[in-house]
Length: 126
Ligand SMILES: [Zn+2]
Ligand SMILES: [Zn+2]
Image 1 (cartoon, rainbow, N blue to C red):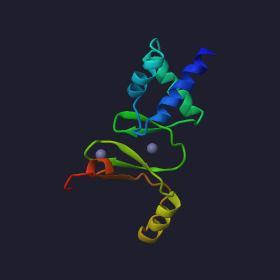
Image 2 (cartoon, rainbow, N blue to C red):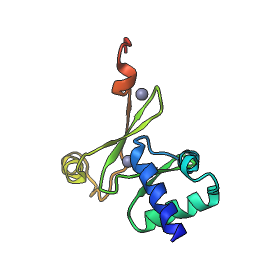
Image 3 (tube, helix red, strand yellow):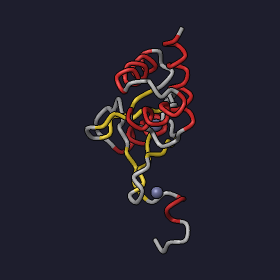
Image 4 (cartoon, rainbow, N blue to C red):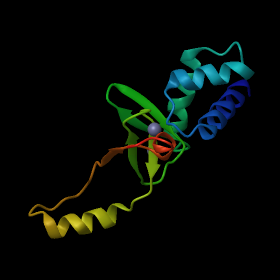
């Protein structure tokens, strides 16, 4: 019982954050309502949630980030604030494009887009 409550809280926290939090970010926020929770517990629950496909995870260099979006999507990284945004682009569309441009049969794409996000471009010259 206790464990499922923690899991629920962890899932709620990840869903409330749209910046692909690391385990540590989740830990700090869950601690507000559950001061006795340990980082290990947060890790275990995050991984269990990924196993249950309630969450997905993104490898960001050496860091693992957690994502409430479990459907197919790609990421846009802001060069200014470093935030990773979800972008819904269908893989089929990309594969169709590549089929015309590429001599190989592409099965999978790992796309990372970078630029300046709306938040950061507000009021700046870039
Ligand atoms: Zn930004
Ligand atoms: Zn994502």
